[in-house]
Length: 202
Image (spheres, rainbow, N blue to C red):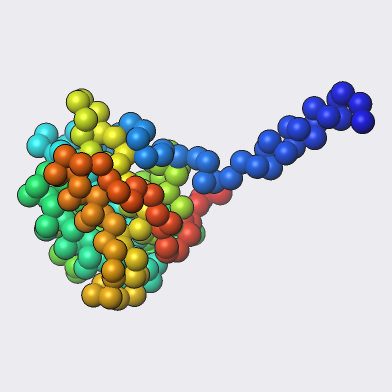
């Protein structure tokens, strides 16, 4: 095997070993800010809430059965933790051409039907979704303010039972925020997000 062949094979193996899991932010990284349109027409960013100690970012949508099963739990998370400085921001990542039920008007309709008490914003370009590395709906990122930045403290699922909230034996998001609020490190900081794959434009 000559030198050029060795280089080409090494490059192929390097590229072949790169997966979607390697993309996006990781636990401990500085969170990426965004400026996305809420269902009420206002623009939302990480700077929108001056009192936020952190955020529960949830990549979710109207149409995914898993997202629907988690809607009430997401509402409950906001009601429990927004007052403690950790509000929910829900981000709809799907391309509307690929998933018409997730269009902006349908987002507005769903938010009204469910009475979402948190921002439900559209990532129309999908740049924020790609930057975070979200792959499923729902996919959660718990952020914690450290100094002037928000750091990623947890990534993954809301809990360990997508179909039955009362049967969940681990509530990962709650565990993470409770630990952060107590000034402790997050015990389980990374889990597998279970849900529908994101509908990309390309």
